[in-house]
Length: 183
Image 1 (cartoon, rainbow, N blue to C red):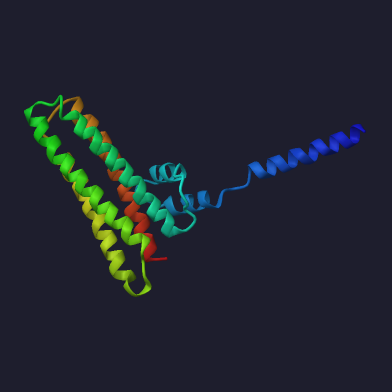
Image 2: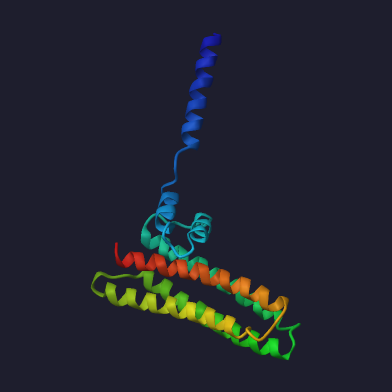
């Protein structure tokens, strides 16, 4: 009887260990796809947390764009909230930056739409559009930071941190889109 219980417990332990060490195929895709990204740790972290389907390189690129849209939208909301307490110079920079981040979100949404509807006959054209729009989003994010060069203090450092975070995920999204072109 004791041997039967021991055998049952042993089998259950082996099954539990085997199931807990099974690697999620999408996490393998994230790791292999992100290893050469501009910001690999950020890429792996953000896309490992992504809840939607990402089992193909195309779905992973779409996920990266969705993450970028989400981060840019949150940054825009943060910037809007700062305008209430800002001085005159900060308000001008904040207004410009908010507009640039809104443009980034628009470009990223166009990219996502394009990636969802890739067609064989227009693939190169669509990929060119996607790369152009993500590059424009990155330029907008960079230009946003330029507006704060003459402003000192906590506002500048907080904005730089937030926008740099958006730029990192956007840069990684561009990398993943470029990989689609070579797949």
